[in-house]
Length: 346
Image (cartoon, rainbow, N blue to C red; front, side, top):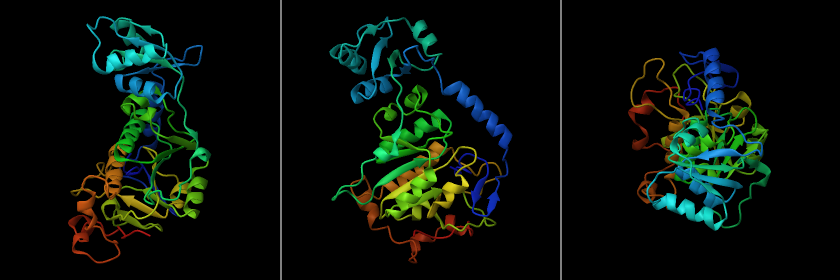
């Protein structure tokens, strides 16, 4: 996302114009992302059977509970005196399902995981892949109209993706849709960074993200993209509003873009509204951005806390109103500092 153009640092685009951040270094960004792909996306080599090594206590335990993967064997660090708590539960689950259990020493696990933080637990498992978005179940009569899906375009850092999935699961996002091309796959590093949330979340994928967004808009969904902190000289054909002023009253797709370039032109043009996070102070050049996973958490919380059953939701509900209506609460120093910010929700 640029909060993602910002939230990742390089140019973000509006139809007809290109706005470059002050510290945009496209070539350097490309090299950094290439290193991330090499260093992080494949922490362990695939076995001849096409399996991969899942590591970490929470990812392994949740993978066993979810039963989405084929598990070839469980590796528990030897030398621990008496397995307790979640490690004991892991062992019981494996034995109940006749999964072979090995007890290698710490040095062996370190080598297998290439010195990732494994917490003394690894599993040899089949890969987990996003499902085609055509398998998404449509809403049923009686479903809450305030549904929220998170759409991720070309996220490439596995730790960012994992952190985003963890926040999405924690805050109550219903589905996650990723772009099929140039996106980080669902690797063990992503699962570890998500604290295992990847193992239980509904993650789907599409090769035509813009087409998907346009189809959902025709079905009555609001497509809300994300941009960095607007500056007075910026203009946009799409309304931009602060996430704190956004009124969630219909099914919504929240779209986050790539760490370096934000949303593509085609995807941004498919959005009906752009959300942004306003800073708490005047920022010097080079600090106008947030990490994409941090921004995702802020945006998702500002939306999800409008649910009536969300903690503090009832308390906040009477404060929410259409941002087009004048209100003393909408006249804050943040909005006054950003004359380029247009109000509102469609």
